Length: 178
Image (cartoon, rainbow, N blue to C red):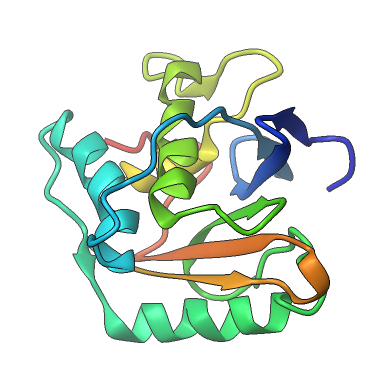
């Protein structure tokens, strides 16, 4: 995914999604200013922003699934060699994130995905023009119940790669998330 980096604070971050609204892969960017509490587990850092987004819509929280987390970790381990923002093309919904440097946290990746909320219009069931919102809609997809995520530092200083997988998947063309 070339051409979708946004530079801020000395680093860059990109997030990728399977965009079933437009039948294409996409990327977006976000700015982060706060770090999560250092004692929060990675699972809680991934889940807290996503479940907060669901709670704001009165949708049941996602439940951590060890099998999905293993799937995400296995895929992240493959990506640590090149840190390419590519999807696994597996059977689950998937949000992916890449950030330059080594300081990116799971909470920052989840916040980047959730921040797309501002670009989603429920009534037209679409993203604002030239914007992406598929990460957000996957997070709030009503029938999605389980989540598993992982994070790796890529080799040779290529950055950080993170992935969350969702089951059942969402983002079906023509269907609203909630």
